[in-house]
Image 1: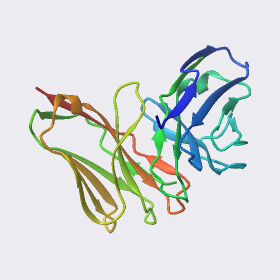
Image 2: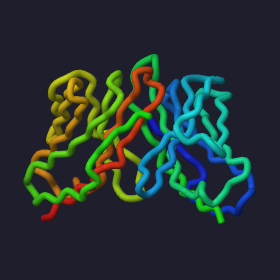
Image 3: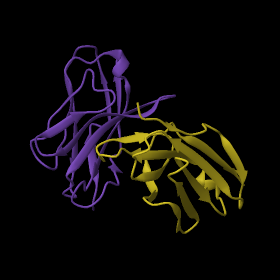
Length: 114
Length: 111
């Protein structure tokens, strides 16, 4: 089944404790992206990647890191989480330049930073 | 700053009626336009994509695009209670690298 997976789905952590949210897609998509969704603010892009080893900032990159060492994986790293990073996070992917820009979303990761 | 504007709603329609959802965008160079449906706590699900001016129909859904007016709309015919959700308008920038979302319109379909 073609899908985008994220892990963990739910996470409670404390301020300053480094964490990684994994994202993987099995559709051979070139483009991958991370979003956060907050009440009243909607979905906002954090980082995106056009292909392996090519990443760039979205609208709200502060406090986040990403890497794209393999085509299928695009982990989101919070080096020192803070309470304002409490949010619902979505990973998404699309074919990209090879075939289209429709983005397909993972199931989401709900993060609470205490 | 690219902007995508939607009425937050809620938009309330009776079952069987036509629901009309609207969206405007600021980046005149935008090329791709999408409507996503999102149930509470779930991930966005693609409903329609549209790339050229005019109408595009898929079942009960019709997307309309007017690039001159920078306006995108979604019509849902024969609305069902299961259509009750938040509908997100999304616009690709001219370089296709970023997708900007509106804040969404909540649709409530009453039986």
